[in-house]
Amino acid sequence: MTEPLALGIDIGGTKTAFGLVNREAKIVLNGSIPTTGHGAVEQYVMALKEAIEPILEQAGKNNIIGGGAGAPNGNYYTGEIMFAPNLPWHGVIPLAKLLSDALGIKIKLNNDANAAAIGEMTYGVAKGMKDFILVTLGTGVGSGFVANGQLIYGHDGFAGELGHVIAVRDGRKCGCGRNGCLETYASATGVVRTAEQWLEERSDATLLRELKGKITSETIFEAAEKGDVFALEIFDYTAKILGQTLADMVAITSPQAIIFFGGLSQAGDILLKPVKKYMEETMLNIFKNKVAILQSAFSDANAAILGASSMAW
Amino acid sequence: MTEPLALGIDIGGTKTAFGLVNREAKIVLNGSIPTTGHGAVEQYVMALKEAIEPILEQAGKNNIIGGGAGAPNGNYYTGEIMFAPNLPWHGVIPLAKLLSDALGIKIKLNNDANAAAIGEMTYGVAKGMKDFILVTLGTGVGSGFVANGQLIYGHDGFAGELGHVIAVRDGRKCGCGRNGCLETYASATGVVRTAEQWLEERSDATLLRELKGKITSETIFEAAEKGDVFALEIFDYTAKILGQTLADMVAITSPQAIIFFGGLSQAGDILLKPVKKYMEETMLNIFKNKVAILQSAFSDANAAILGASSMAW
Image 1: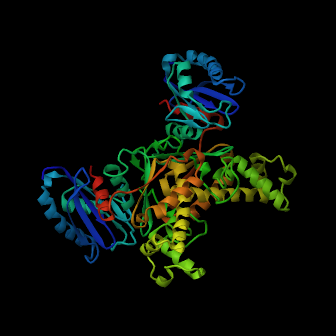
Image 2: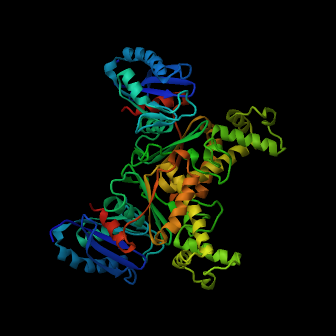
Image 3: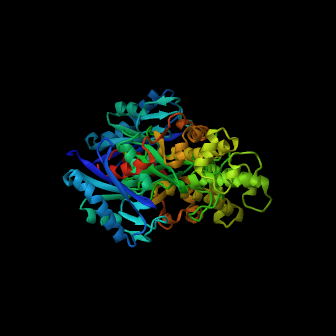
């Protein structure tokens, strides 16, 4: 192999996946290790080095142009992971430096959603776009806002917290300690909260009733696909809150497109059609019928590696 | 005079003010004409040319590096004023081209709030800042969002409509046809609506009661300065809605500062102290105690000319 390749590392709560990616978004070599069970972060970095070194050598280290890592609470400016609740290391971890030193390759760090946004610009549906919003609908809600062809990091690197915009004033309790954050409604866990709450409050028939207590966003989606009115209503309710919040975001950055990514967004039209409807209904006139609602073309498994690698180009 | 100068033109609903500005934000020559009463826009441009030509000649045309015009609904990308409800010309007006042709100077167009944001970056309290929000609290609420040292225009030039973010779901009717827009509460007209509504609903004593029907934001401010509890409560109520909305904006662009400008912001601490309090209370933890709340250092009369001129540097 002699083509230039970028290393992408996706650091998740349980697994760290990595891959070497070419300019055409093809992952030519890849692997993974568990994120947990290594003790201190230095041991984790050593284990990751041992797993990555062989594919670097196989590809030829001279072909590697650099790399990127995506992690929850990763800060692009400082290269640090800061107080990530779902990672095994606490406090402030200078991960970009640790990885760069261990691998002998310049590694840039970012949070998952920002990495995904750069990935879409580099390889994906946002190629050529200068103004768009990437929204990840997973366990939480993340986002990367791109304006003038650049990611908005803010003065401290913490910009893009769409999941913690207050969607419902005095609404549901959020893990952040506040109430009504978008991610308490429009995430995989948010729709489950809606389902469980409605099952308590209501008595109408639904396929979900027998799953009470072990409902997932997937089972809600499956029920909705079968035409279950209760499940469809959950998606409609979620879409209304999400669409209304996005209408406000459009008023600020006027994006060409909003690109959805992550587990819950795989519900596709069942979620995104009503999102578009409610967003258009709620939006200021000058923005109507101008904002495309798109889904990422990457599979969930690959997208994080692609996103992380894209920072290197 | 041999120093370089920039022409700034501030197009308001009743008056068009202009001035030549040096690099130190000093307006060295200025003048104005009425905006209305000229008939077609071409006649207005001719009248403006006649008024501006003498100061260009006085300054020496070779010293003029260029110019900018700020106008409601001015679009930076197209150079057009688009459907401005408060200007005498309807539809789409290619004002940047008309002015550039008439004056023989390249004139850039922008909306007032964006021009003000560039003005603050060029001459004002935002000098050296790369991430901030400029908020104008006048008849309406306008805004210019700056990220990575650049104004966010969006894909169509219409970004930055903070005044039309829904601050209160199903709230007050807005001129835009929707309900609950921030500017129906947090503008000079918004606080008057609050006052008039409360006077209808409540019977507590206030200096404002005898002004019922002819209250202005200034009279509310004067009453508040005298310690009128009713008037102070209006500012507190307004600040809460504004502060909560700004907390959401901070989550998106993580600015170093929010800079206030325009008539209502001259209430100063009476408004901005509670704005800061409510914003901090509502904000996600990672943003707390990091965002400065500032007032523009320019007088209202000069700021628009300075802002418009700043596009030329």
